[in-house]
Image (cartoon, rainbow, N blue to C red; front, side, top):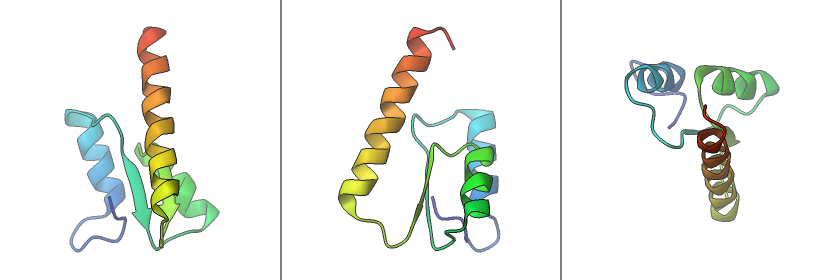
Length: 78
């Protein structure tokens, strides 16, 4: 999800999705790349924050890592 959407922020989209039915993986792909932007994305519920331009291998690595983390959470009863 992009952070700089017209009319609503990607942070708000992540929070809304998390409160209704959280997708297995949520990754912020955005032009905002500061440490504060990353912290805000993670606080909003994103699994990862990637600054554009994003290389496909980097995106795939983050998706795989988020899925692995999700599997670990399910096994531990979270």
